[in-house]
Image (cartoon, each protein chain N blue to C red):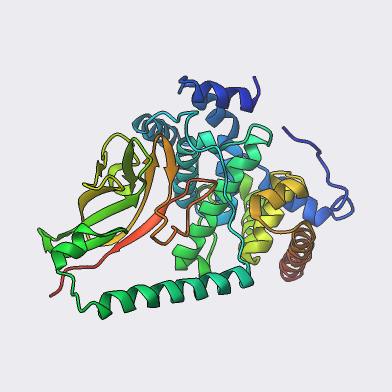
Length: 180
Length: 201
């Protein structure tokens, strides 16, 4: 059943149909928020808030458009608000507890180190660039969808993604230079 | 769900491909958090198809804004001239009776101030108030029609701080036209803000 059909069922009184929508979109939403905010707990808060807001505003969803795009627009908005409100993200560091725990396992040390370096590099990106990069390459939205989600123009988004890629290459290149 | 495994823009860049592959790794979903989300959803009123079906996007047009400012200034000056010219001074009771916009009332009780929510909607048959303070429950705070039948009123005691709210007019969400819009409203959930000052020490 399509997302739009599930939304229709919810609006017709079958609130449980929203659970199916949550199951479909929870993972990408939580992943985006985690990568964007760099903190699991804040990502959970923001994702929960976005899903509750989506449920409350479900009647405003236009079935002609993609539910994922609509939901991500809410989520991106909540992430931006969270970044603005919490000044600690100005000096964001990677504090992913799973990564830190995994770092103690010797057999996974190499991959964990890589992961931490990648997350550190992503954290250094300008928020606009990080947002565009994650939407494009991690969540695999098209540029038109990204424009609908972020409110930015396609040209600006392409530039942000390009600069994010260049900056990531620089940052990870520096790491490799130091470790080699 | 994956539309493409390798993006042409990054296909020749193994470093970026490695970053992307790492970032695409699924994030574990904690069972307790998932259960909390379900509980949160269960507390909300079911969304209704009768809700707002439009998304209004405001655009700023300088000439329109200047024209509106001039009209407001002229109308304001005319009203001030009429009121002051007549030598009439409104009592606070009259001011309260003639409120046409939401505002905190003077005085406080138990650390809370009473805010009078006002919506001029003479043709509405049912209006209620929803906001952060009542978990956006449209049946929690029905508003009463004013004596002249033009406006809908409700006095609500609120603690100091910023409160986001909206009106439900005959089943449709509507922001308060006489109050500032909430900056963080999203996707057609129109909402307004009222600020309640803290207690004086």
